Image 1 (spheres, rainbow, N blue to C red):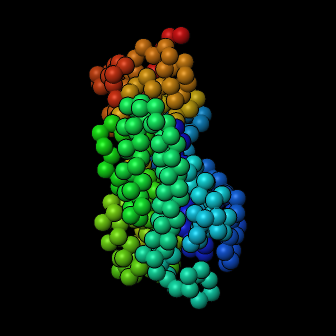
Image 2 (cartoon, helix red, strand yellow):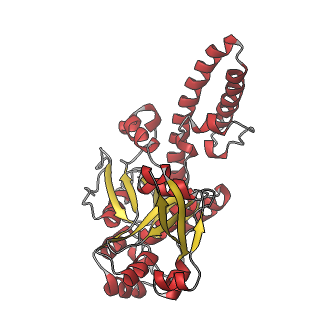
Image 3 (cartoon, one colour):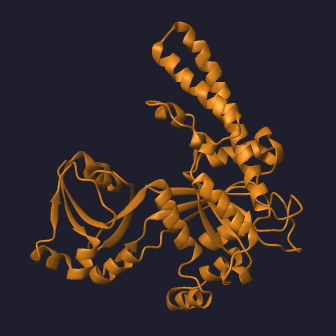
Length: 366
């Protein structure tokens, strides 16, 4: 499965600059509102040092990382839920992503216009969240009206669903996110089927200046965002979009040296991916062979046949067993053959839940 992240924020906060840096896709990045109209989409390989460690051992013809899809959605403005600034189209693009990356401008620059005429990250968070919630309220109200008509038939399931949707509407009306709605038991499917914007997980991406990214302290705006995120249960990543653009042009040792000089342990993409995986409950397993070493993404709790099905539906349909090695054992022993001789290869059946870092070979018969 691929991971689809949507970059959102007010105009001129650095969304497209960050998108270009992460994807090398060359999206337009200019100093005026609504530079991005149609969403730009970039697919990037997920950085995972374990994949390349396995590749160095196996020496395959090809090494393939799992992918991350990043969608650069045009800047939202106050009134977007009512269609202002092409808001309806932009909000529909958000509906299609798994995770929202909310970019916030946390630095002053007189040469870069801010649509609200001043830097205030918390105000910007509320502007975007309010528009998502207002759009969700419209969605929930329409669903409630439809269910109210259906409930005239006295169908118990419809009445129960109507009660859930009505409670959700009352909750959202107070300006709270759908993600914080306390689901009544057995109602999760009802809420999920509404595909609400404010139910999606959020990572706040604080865009700071080049000087601040390598500094010892954090500016006031970043501290405010961290405090807000702690209360709302969200994660925060601090980046400099311009620095990320420089990192994107480097590889290998040059990249490592540059990160060290900047006082960074990892690039923004590396930190973003790790954070996104955690938010969405994802993990990575690997397949190895002389033709290809490859990484695959599944949700935590995925069982072996379903993990096999991501490679090919025949693998799931005819699943027999999974020959499984932990990443640590594979690297420690130095080869698949050595792992077998050490007795550390496991035979897992249909009920086995895949673990992060598993190296798997699927036996199947169709």
